[in-house]
View (cartoon, rainbow, N blue to C red):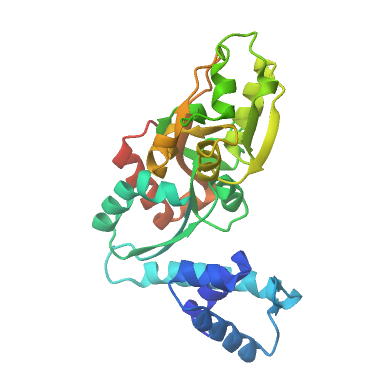
Length: 302
């Protein structure tokens, strides 16, 4: 049993998906499966229950996940203590959306590789709405996220940049666009119930949108709730409704030509984008090093 095998198990235990873990770890699905099988043979216990539709942890698997996390963390700490020089070495787990990897993280990672070449970034990607919860649950050390309206006390947030939050309508001529242009949407008298809304199903932008709708006295006609800003922009571009998304996402998505921002009476607040981490995790030199490089890269305010 080695730390690499433990890291594979931790990934599968977190994702409950062999295919997703294979993508994250840059391994084949069969290699991930063989690693889990070897661990189960060594332990003499089934760690996962598998069928054609799902993967779930057994009772032994839940206990072993905690052991694996402790063991990997202790091994990384030992490597640092016994190192022959002061160079940081080990792994930092980072979660972000696909858009954030190149629109926010690229300059940070470039600078970090130069200053800390022995530290590996274990990157996990998915819906940006999951970033805060993954950090709070201990699945990842750091997440790229928007700033929550209410920041949990045990969470630290490092602002890096701001992106305007806009309400978008289709750029092509369609029924939704005609409705949006048929009257002044920046007028308090505009009847918002005529417009179909495509809204986030969860996350920080959903909280911001809900607060804006409530403060503006708008009861929207919700056409769909979807996960991810990119999906909202795509559906708006197809003429299915109007929707909220950061300007940064629209520019990076390649769908900017298919949507246009709407001018509204009360503008939405900008979205602060940055890094989120548990305060206790920032006591780890590896995590703190990435945090500091990010702040220096963007010259973020303290």
